[in-house]
Amino acid sequence: MSADLMMQSIARLVPHGARVLDLGCGDGALLAYLQAQRGCTGYGIEIADANVLACVKRGVDVMQINLDQGLALFDDASFDVVLQIDTLQHLRNAEVMLRETARVGRIGIVAFPNFAHWPNRLSVLRGRMPVTQRLPYQWYDTPNIRVGTFADFAQLARKNALRVLDAYGLQNGRELRFLPNARAATAVFKLQRMQGL
Image (cartoon, rainbow, N blue to C red; front, side):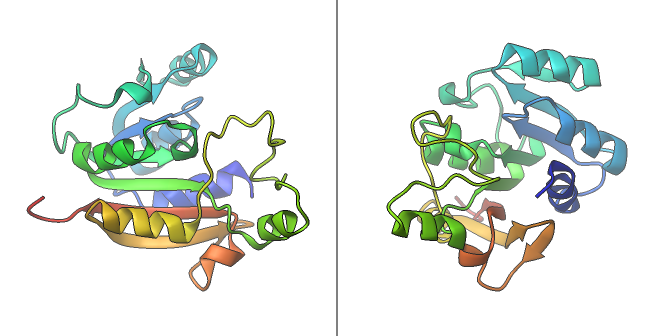
């Protein structure tokens, strides 16, 4: 799936004019798109020097912070939306950062490669770790420190008292709501903290 199609799908979940925090924002393309197309404001968080420079060149406000250290510098509900797009699988403290995403933002949007997608299952059945467009690395050189599935994440959200507002899979630019755990290479969740927590 092209990055543009994924970006458009994610952007539809973000309210117009929202104040956004993009965790692991990469080169800032999504935040720049949200600013231009949806009138959003906000910041990116990124650790890699080259990506920080790319954000600055795009006109995206960025802070160079290691997400493994948490989001303690932000108050509760500081942002309308906190994005974790292709970030979760790189974090050592994924569960903590999921809770922090829901604390700092009124809404959290998380997207990650769905390891339960049928081609991945087929690779594992053949005795090999999958190498696909969505998971393009060999097992020994992947930057991903964990893999997860659509169903795993739904369970993790429940465990952490997060209400799923929307959930679907993305495959070849299409949003899939029927059997996304098996049919989609990317899992997408929109969530928030349950009231009173």
